[in-house]
Every structure is written in structure tokens, then in C-alpha cells.
Image (cartoon, rainbow, N blue to C red):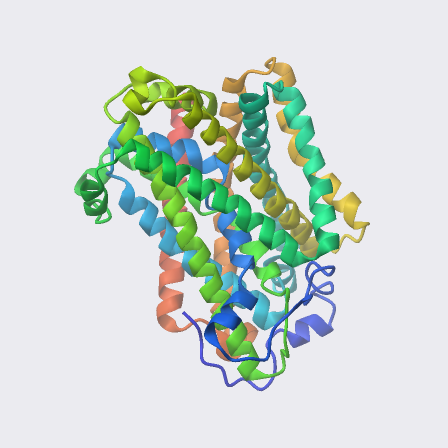
Length: 460
């Protein structure tokens, strides 16, 4: 999914020169990773690999877990096709986001500010900041609950401890962006290994699972459709589009050389797609685990992280494979997922703040403020409801509903910008890419509106 390029002048140069781009995106890591001159495929793939891993984190964050496992518990292997379709849409969107960053040298926030009015830009900034906060809420809750399950740390203290994740990110930034990428890849590997092991132990029916990669008519039934929409809404996250358009610019190469630009777009796309395949596998493992262990049983007992943790050591629910070891592995993977999402969420918060409003404050202050804004609602909820996980779970669900509202505010500008010859030059989306992008944007918007409508209807 790469474009042939013959453009002589780099698209986006005018916007950058007039100051709209507000300087390089994530300036402290922009163009800091050297690229070898060798033309070998695997050497280039390794050199460009890394940003895709940070993006893939958003497609396997704690907000996805209950939905995917619950989908398997309620409907068996039926929704495997939904995970596949969501992943293909993710690959398309992330390809466009990375291409926008490489070609224009602006992230999506900067491009939005450059190509919209101040009023529209302000509205989009507010919506995006709220989406970042909603995303971070799921990460904070997942991390805090994992600390409670593993070490018995009270939720309020666990939530407060997540603030110190920012210090870890600052340290890693000092060591270099490749160190951040390496840590993220290691944590993803932990999650993959844990769930691969648990699925092997659970012995799912792989024949049925593979057959359900083809969409089945039952998906359109009300209950199944609601769960399917939940999986889609929790999978495609708006903050990833901003993040990828920024960190795709971390590679250092000659941006005035068309051949170098083609190489960057090509291998960045390879990196993104490979990493998103990994996220697809993990989401499939989550659904397989729910289907193999809990299908046909009381799925209402699996609505929170603690309930899932307890179910994995409950012989009545998990059967003969139940054990405290499986529960411990689950909590360990949850902690790894929360840490991963914390790193990417904090970086994205910086991209948004700098790109939309050009706020220049010390790096550690900017990241700490971003984190505290996200932690505050979780702490307030924890204090009001006395550390109740059920209350935090409701907050998590509400945050995912808000992300459904915010998603079109990121997808539609991305589709407009990357389809524009004026902005992208010869890198503009090919007609078939544009059609797929608009179709995905419209369909996801309609589906997410249905989620919102269903949630509002339930309230009354």
C-alpha cells in the first residue's frame, strides 16, 4: 500500500515555512534514528521498525480486553470476522497517518491546524484532548487493577503510582527513541506469550474459529451486533492516528530525494502492517480464550478485570485448566498492557498539545500535566465510590463510548488531507484507497453512533 512518487517539491513545505506546523513534531526525537544507506530489504525493515509497535499498543490496550473476552464468552467464535475487519481498517488508517507525517513533515494535529480555520481547529483540539484523556483512563484503570491483583495494592494508591510512569518515559527519552521502541516490543511480547500459552492450555476449536473469519448472518442479530460494534469501537482508536503521523518522522533521511521518500513510506507501511498483524493475533487470542473457557457459561460473571482474574482459577468456570498460575499470568499481561499504553498515551498528549496550540513548556511539565489530567477523573471516581472496581469499570466503559464519539473527528480530517493533491502531491491516496478510506470512515461513524444510541437508550 505505497504510492509511486515523482514530485519535485515536497508537499507541505509551504505550510511548514509559514509557521503553521509549529516546528518539528516531537522535536526531541524527530529525525533522531539514522537509516542505513544499504538497499537490502531486511536491513531497511529493521531500521524502520519500531513506530508500528507503539501504534499497535493502542489496538490491544486494556479497553479491548473485556470486550474481546466477553465476545468469546457470549457468542463463541462468531465474532472472529469482526476482529479481522477491524484490523484491516486499522492498517488502512495507520498507513495514511504515517504517510501524512512523512510527506508533509507535519503530524495530524499540525496538519489540521494548518488546513482549517481557528474555530474548527479549536473544536477539533478540544475533542482530541478529551479523547486522549478517555484513552488514558482505560490505561490507568488497567494498570491500577493489575497492581491490586498482583500485589494487593489498594486501587487509589495504584492509580497514584501510574503518575510515575511519566518518569520512566522521560528516562527512556534521554536514552534514545530506539530504547522506547525496544521496551514496547518487549512488553508486547510478554502479552503475546501469556495469551498464546493460555489459549494452548484452553484448547479452542480452531476449525470453528477459522470458519468464522468469514462473516456469519447471525452477526446482525441485536445482541451479537451490539457486541460486534463494541469490539470495533474499542479497537480503532483516534489517538493512534496522531501518534503515528508524528513518530513516523523519527527516521533520519534525505526528504528532498524522491527515492528516499518512497523508501520511507514503503518500509514504514511494512512496519505498521507487521505490528498490526501482531495486535490482530493478540485480539484473536483474547476472543479464543473467552470462547474456549467460558462460552455457554454465565458471561455476566466476566464483566470486570477482577472477575476475569478470578474466573481463570475457578474450576466451575474455567474447568480443568483453572489455576492461580493462569490468573497471575493474566494480571501480568494486564500490567504490561497498561504500561505500554501509558508510554504511547503520554507521547500522543504531547503531539496534540504542541500541534494544535503550539504550547511550549518544559518537556517534563508538559508530560506531567497530560498525565495528571487523565488520572484526576480516576482518582475522583475511586474516592467517591470507595475504591470500587465496579465504579471504575463503569468509568472505563463510558470512556470507550466517548472514544466512539471522538473517532470521526480524527478519521475524516485524515482522509481529506491524504486524499488531497494540494497537500500530498503525488503521494495523495490512489482512488481505490480514497474510496476505502471514506467507506471505512462513514461505516465506522454510523456503527459508533449506534453504540451511542444504544447506551443512551439503556440509561432511560
